[in-house]
Length: 191
Image (cartoon, rainbow, N blue to C red; front, top):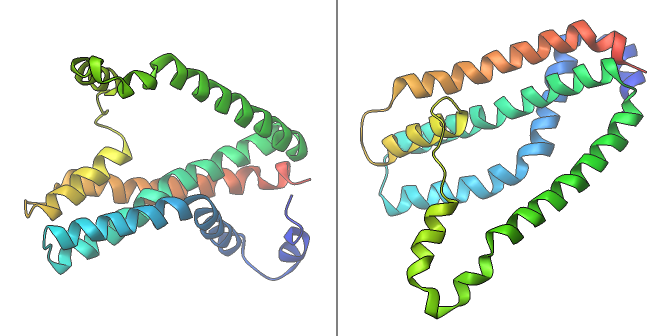
C-alpha cells in the first residue's frame, strides 16, 4: 500500500536491495521502542556491574539480531497474507484483531485481580499472587538466547556460544526465509 512503490519498482534497483531497504525500514518502525528502552537499561546494567567493553559490543550485536528475527518474520507473514487476501482488507482486519487483542488483555488483567496487591491485610498472598504470574521461559526462543548471552557477558562468565549462535543464525535465517517468501510471492501479492 506504499505510495512510492510504483516509483521504486520502475527504477533500476534490484529486488534484493529493495527488500533489504524495506526490511530496515520495517525494523526501524516496529522495533524502535524496544531499542529505545532496551539500550539504556542494558547500558545501566553495564555501568552498575562495571562491565568490560566486550559487554557493550556483544549487547549491540545481540540487540540488533534480536530485533531482526521478529521483523523478518513479520515481513514473511505480511507477504503470505497479501498474496492470499487483498492488502486493504488485511489492514482493516488487522485493526479489528488489534482491538480484540486489547479487549482480551484488559479482561485478562481484570481476571488476575491486581487490586488485591493494594490491601495490606493480604500481604502474605502477594507472594502467591506473584508466583501465579510467573511462567516458565521456553528454551528455544530468541528472548531466552538473548538474555542468557547478555547476562553471561555482564557477569563475566563464559559466553554461551550455542545461544549466541542460535540468535545470530536465527536472524540470518529469518532474513533469508523472509526474502525467499517475499521474492516468490511479491508479484502475486502486489495490487
